[in-house]
Length: 311
Image (spheres, rainbow, N blue to C red):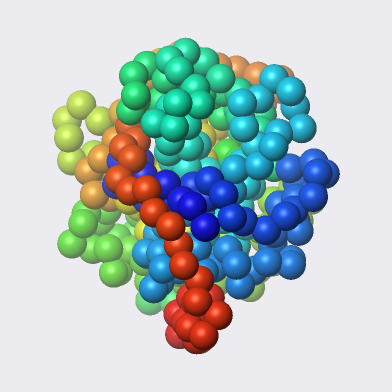
C-alpha cells in the first residue's frame, strides 16, 4: 500500500495513494459507509499503532462523483470513519500539490458530507472553504463527576461537537492528561443523556476553550477526537463549529479574521461568510508539510497488523 504522510499544524495525516479496498462507485457517503461497516480492520491498520501513530487521520483518495472535483476523499481515524476533516483537507491539498496533481489556486474536493474548496497560496499554505456549519443547541448543561456543571453548545462543522466556551481545566500543554480525562467524561455524559446532532448524528468530538497564550490570538482550544487522542492542530471542523457559535451570538462579524490557537500553540486563521438562515460558510487557513512517502507492508502473520487494542 502506497501512502504519503504529512502534518497540518502538528496533526498527522496519512493519504492512501494506492492499495486500499474497492469501495465501489456509489456516492462518497455510500463508499464511506462501506469502509466503516466492512473494512474496520483495514482502516485501523493504517492509522493505529504500530503501523500508524496516535492522533493520525487517514484519507482514502477515491474517484469523485462530481466532475468539478479534483479528488474524492474519505476520512477515518483509529475509532471511526468521519464525515469531514479540516486539518486532513489541508494535508490532502498539500499532498496533491506535492504529487503534481494540482497547482496554485482554488480547487474542489468531494467529501462524504459535501464539496469543499481548497485554495493553495503556496505549496504549504491552504485555505479550506468548509461545508455549511451551524449551531444546533446553546448552553446545554451536563453534570460531570468531580467537576460539577459544565455548559456547552452543540454545533456542526462537518462533524458534531460539544463546545465548552470556558474550560473547567486551564487549556495549557501541561494539562493535556487532565483535559483528556475531563473531555472523555463530558462525552460519556453526552452519551448517557442521549444527546445527538440532527438526524441522530453522533456527538463524538469535545472542544474546551480557554484564553490564548499569544496576545494576537483569539483563544486556545483542546479538542478530543473519537479515538480519545487530542488534536494537535486547532481542528478545522471544530473551528468551523466554533465560528457558527460565535456568529450566532454576534461575537464575530462576517469576514472578520481571528487566529485560533491549538493546545500545542500552532494556529489557524479563521473567518466566515453568512449562508442561508442561521448557517455559515467557514474559512480555515493553515499550513501542511509532507513528511514521508512509504510502502506499508501488512504481513498476514502479524497479529498486530490491525492495530493495538487495549480494550
